[in-house]
Image (cartoon, rainbow, N blue to C red; front, side):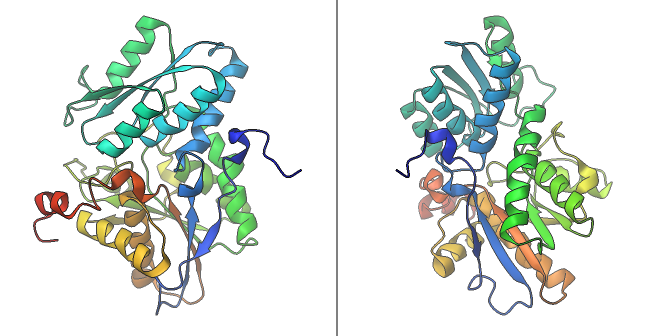
Length: 323
């Protein structure tokens, strides 16, 4: 009988798809790593299940316990699935920037959702990450702490990197990824560079994020942007900047259009972070040229979490008046 033992065993081993129509006319080959095909719909399933497994093994998360996390939605969704499977309660803290689609899904999965005003610096006690940390400390709950939890990086080093290496038969030349917590780029990039030091790691960063400037060694500040899940106004503890070879900044309008172009050309329905990364992959080909390079773009999540945002023209008209 070919049956999975549980939902947890279905996390990872996502397909790699040639984006030949999206990248038509290029002299390089772009592939999408379809992380939206994880059970919870995003790359964050990998870290959610792995972080919980590690916490259980360390004895800091006990049966019937409570998990607290600050999230842009997707890690919370992965944690909610794992919590349902293992019998934990989940409390999530989120910025008001998170789409209502993801909030509604978290609530349907049984998570407590606390939505807070955005725009607060990380130094502010009222920042959603700090409030999550305070809640966990005061209640005795386990804080998943994805931005600083080394198990996040480990999950990608042990799974995402090896999968890409195997799927490309060791011929991957370039990895394009965003940074939210830093786990995907750091864990995957570290593995690939250990296999082949010539592999280039490209950071796709939304215009408005401070990370591009940080990597370039420039004075770096943050401003508002629409893309969810990647880009930051602080430096995540899991982000190893030394791995990054190139940085490509992407405007919101280009991220949104790239997501829609993937749907038109490849029937791949993704969110704004995937659009940002896909656009950066195209830009890398245009800016750095070369022939026959194999470029892998991480596609972190699907479009169903953004029906009320980037796939709602009336919403877009208020956010991107020229779109």
